[in-house]
Length: 621
Image: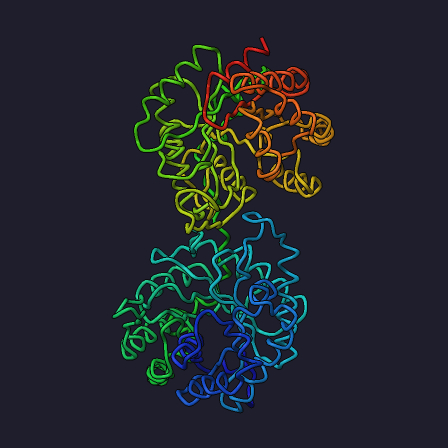
């Protein structure tokens, strides 16, 4: 094309293409395949889709490389073909575009969480984006387009990566819910100025929602940035029609909203999921009809508006200072003052009848236990949630709980809602854990979903304690959670375990609870490496109930190391009662040796037997 992308953008509104995945699926490609790999295996099919969009009038066609990063290609065993897939994707699009359309190198999110929500560092993420961007640039793209990002940190890493290797124009697009906030809760008033600050050429939104809610988001973005905008909505929400997902927005309806987008400084308009060449054809007709007005943005927005600088990034309004640690809870006060604390774990009951567990909590309080940890979903079956049991115990037994809260099967916004509700009901002490996949139990086909890990969870709670949510919006008064994290002192890779602990410490951890300790020599070595953090350490204890129980812990529980001498002692115990007594004796001995080097103990039992747990506690007195 004679003009560059930016020159064309100055002259007119550019129409981008529609959905690649929708079209490939319609041509018989199953969704369990890597669509990006078709650049190598079926370039003719990919080229056909591009050509259909060019014939429909698209000014921009996107390469078939949305998921062609090292992480997502790795899921299909194709990471070694990353460069070829991206470069060929650009060449296929270039051939189809000819002199009629610009080629945009499509880059989507990695499919993993990066810091502060995940364990992948920003530097690592930049490198992943850099290698994909480099291959697309070598293929000859005119512009790079980031799309369907939910995390401002991740798209920021992508922008940094491509900016470090090229000065090509960049279109940076987030994906939002119907309320206009990203899927992680960041509002347009925050992400639009941030994308401008990070060096995007155009900013916009795509996917997730249809034209109507996207228009409201575009209006909010236009109010806080001077950059030109892009909008690529889905063709409405998918509807299940006889087992198929059908997008019901007509081409004419999409075109009517294209006209409205243009009136709010949108200079690139197209479609995402469910849009077809016919949608793009109608959008092109709508854009042509508005061409004279669209070429004069000052007429649409007012000359003064265009010349204004970008709006400053909104500050987070904090209505009160963070809660001092010693005032967060009785447990927090005890730890801050150096008091030795005793915790005995209670398991959530099967079913909904919690009265026996509450009664056991009352007994623990009478016996001088300081806090009752409640594990989060450690057992299979239909059980009362740990959060619900913790609230009932605090309200009815009058003893503080330590809620074990895991990331498993919860997304960021769901976690946030859970914790705000927990705080409203009086819970203050949290042990933040990633959680284990549910591989066994009553529902062997159940799967586990992890949106973030314990590092990201610690960052989330620390933000709530500073008075803002995951999207940086103020929540009013800050929460006062006392943040505990877990450390496995018998991890197979202790350096990696302590590296993760450093991230948790940086995120805002205030105390540590270890996995059950059996190997004292190993524990003491790790404890020395934890000392620089100056965090209180609560050691986990577990009284064996039988020789079989001890062998199970030694051989089938990840992250547990049981010395052979302890197994021999349990095997030598004669009878059930003798085995229980020996297990308690071993736990008492470990507790006595740990007493002077830690600030507390947490006693757990496999069956929830509080008598055995109390027998261990009594040994300290």
